[in-house]
Image (tube, rainbow over all chains, first blue to last red; front, side):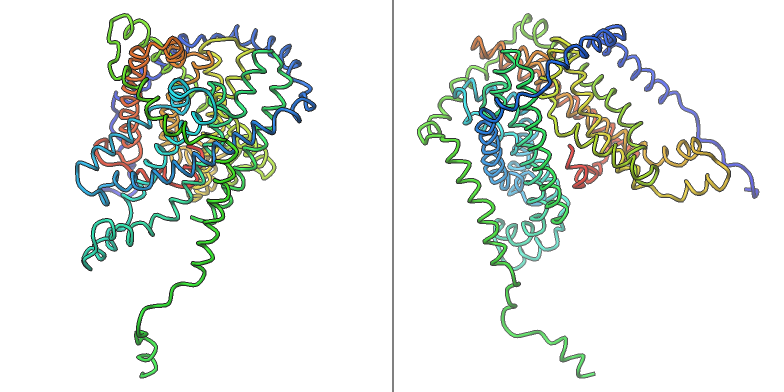
Length: 262
Length: 294
């Protein structure tokens, strides 16, 4: 090749252009389906401007009386669900990794189980539990346990997949049983990640538990739903601000601790 | 010489337990046990309710396991709603991707002045603090019942999450190409187009797809409050205690979500590794930074 000659440009292929065209076509179609129209957006802004006045000023006098109780319940739901969900997820995550599963059947069944429960959103779990066992915090706790379990199962099992298999072999060579070997060699490797994920899941649970009450599963969402029925948007605004501040604070603490862990 | 040997001699007996383990153990106990006692006592869930829960759940799960596969239920009530969820998730992701992409340049510390990154970053954090359902809840009286409200809620939340991830990707780029373009006389647009974009686009597009997978789940449940999608159908079937039909809704939703997940993760792998079939680098999403905003 002579010096200074230009490298040949990559071969042109029609596939990317077709893909982009398909994506654009689908986008236009989907936008129509969800009712996207510019004139409506302009109209909406008009309504929004009139409407925003009804959110202000937030009704703090009412909030001081009625928000703290349900808000504490919300946090309690998240704590219980995160602790139970993450504890239950520990063995399940170990069974869902090829490295540490007892046998192939356990691995496939568990992996399948985790994939299926991960497709069901937290609100759906809440609705199912509310229908099954009635309104209240208990349904919320159970829903968030399933939610925590599904996320921890995926995150932790993938971390276990990438753990160093050396120590596991070493532990097995000393004659340890499967569970003993995993406990002594793989568990310490993934422990910092486990704690970091657990904190992260606690954050998610706090965020989720604020809205679970909308479908009747306890916590501050119940109050939100009730005030919406009365069109008291000033009260809704007060609740939303409280939720925002608490979620923000908990997240900052959690992010700080997670940074130090990993 | 002998000194060296003395140093490497193995100490007899068991090694001492590392210091501080006891302290850590107690902290863990305090951090876990105290809040759980506080939380459990506050919620006041009786033992009786816990013991009855499995039977209660089984009573509604059992009829769901025999879903209603009639043409009307599957093709006229459920599938169109699931498709509506899909459209909401797609447009929401597009809205989030467009705005977050523009804003993420302003939030990247290596491309923008300090005051601007501070501003945009906190904007992202503030947006992320609101769950989509809460956003939809606020939008509902303004934009009315329907898919558009859900789309806006998802789009807005996605700006926060995608913006944070994208700006972190941009901060991680190699500054070399940027300097090279600068020294060749390239101005800001060329630096962005030929220096930054080629480095960040694959990862950012992978994040967009990942967000789409999440948004599909979100748009499924936004219907619960009337913001469009399959959630509305599930609510009404559960309310009428028509459990076989509710089972159909769940089953169809699970199948569609699984299919989209599989296709999307294949495309993501193709984008990141260049090969479709291989086991992809899932570590991409195991970074604590990425995990923080899933």
